[in-house]
Length: 180
Ligand SMILES: [Zn+2]
Image 1: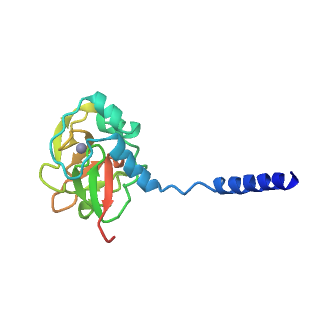
Image 2: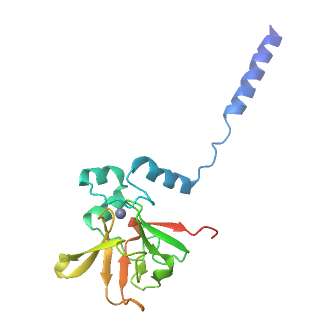
Image 3: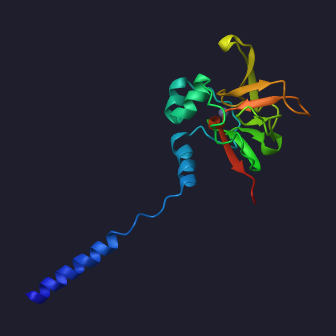
């Protein structure tokens, strides 16, 4: 009887020891990636088919902070976005739909506090609309595939284009070049 009790105690301890290990470490980046593929089925870096989605769909598939800028033409505070002083080599995609927008080669150090580019990755990457908000006349930049708000373009950029695409980091997804 005594021996039986010791045996039961022993197996209980062994079982507890096996199940009480620390949880496996989670990778932040892979979590962020899967968030896109799970909740936003419209996101694609290869499909260039135009998207015309109602606001109710965007509200469902975008994280709230992305939705606010993308759909309500919000602006993130200067010097707060993740890419304003970022210098990695690679491509910037629309965070809402995966459309390729800018190459890091076209990014320049701007003092405005938002990621700035002098040209888009291809013709049709973005669309333009006159924005009369706040008593100004500015040129709004929209994604050429899904139409969400990305930022504005100004005529005070560096050569060769003289353009300054002033973007919100939150609506951009950066993918580093392979091998970098
Ligand atoms: Zn887009």
